[in-house]
Length: 173
Image (cartoon, rainbow, N blue to C red; front, side):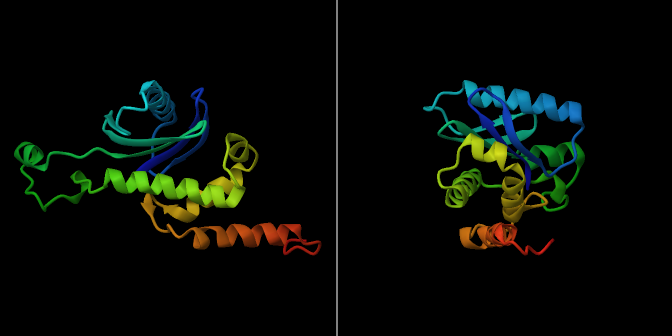
């Protein structure tokens, strides 16, 4: 399950954030700033995966934007079962089956979908059309689970909204 999605520029300013787990606002701000600082300080030769404060962080840089996805870190179920007395298949809340390469591919699909929607996606597109970007992300991810990766299916509702808003006799007039 995805815990959060962040889009950040090279200066470390958050341009979009979506959280799929409840987190206190102070904790959210602290976590965001620390993760952003960690991702920005890494070189391009380093791996795009890191674990930090109980989260597995997967990130990728496209032009001037960093796309960051966070999920719960893997737990060593054998050690945890010794501590809690729970057998391996007993408690599903302690296991995380998220695949880092799958999430990296999701980031790439998200960027490709945004590129198809806005031409070549840039920071200004996200800033000035934030509501549509949130809508796009919400079409792909619901409650922390990836539900749609087909670019055409994701963009169809956004195209319909754009078409209706450009009509003189729009749906809401």
